[in-house]
Image (cartoon, rainbow, N blue to C red; front, side, top):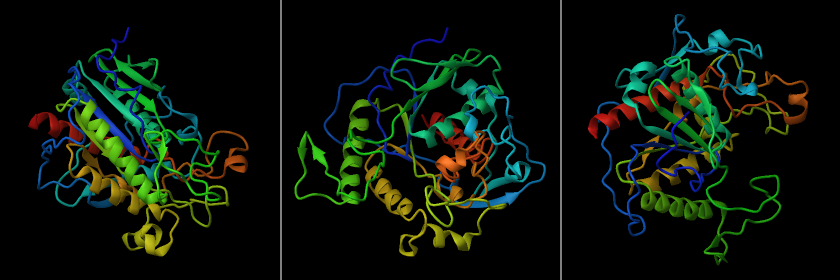
Length: 354
């Protein structure tokens, strides 16, 4: 039986859509809450190694580490089972950082480093997309891995050979909200509240987002032990072309975008399909500067990969007619496997530094 988590990570951590807070728990008890926004010392990283800046290079010998039989798959992202075109080509691209070498994860070695510890993911379906990749890769080292569930947590896995639990808490937004089915309705302005009272004068969405960010970061800093390694993933880009998800937007690409195309898609001044991404990332980066929460900046490398979404291969009859193409989540195996390589390398560095 999987051991219970000693730190109650899941019931109260809520996160904005498209963002991830990844927590490595060293099984320490919580400290007494400190004053708001404590000034923790930044966790250093290797200065000569920027894993987030680089380019995609095709390697015909590259193969996925798992297949469509992984028990942690979610059907709509299982592009091998759903017979998505060009999966061999999609997975032949590898991310090559400009300043250093990014090795593929050694699942046995990583789980050995994590022995008797807990790992927590918090976020929306894109973070679950990330989680599935993570679990399927780690299962290579422990085929006895079992699905794990605890009250207050969405899902996860337990790896008995290493006594490692990976938990995931499903959370769409950073704050409590009462909206319609559209997360960000345009018909009426949003109202932001603090301590149950409306903030006046009313805030626009970016200023409101900043307020929510600052409150969430303060909460994390006060509640999590300082020795917990905390990483916040910046946004995962969308690649709807020719319209939004409900306007016949498409992503039937057969290769990554070129670098000179990225600004056309993502620079706010170009009114591209994901123009908010960089604005929000800038606010997140600015907010985290005064904390020990590390950035997991997977946005840039993912911006290239318009070719790697499930698109029309969703594994369910009439899914595209009802929901449109999926140009937001990622095929698995696919781009999130590279996210896992980077994430586990940062955790390794964090453990070495202590």
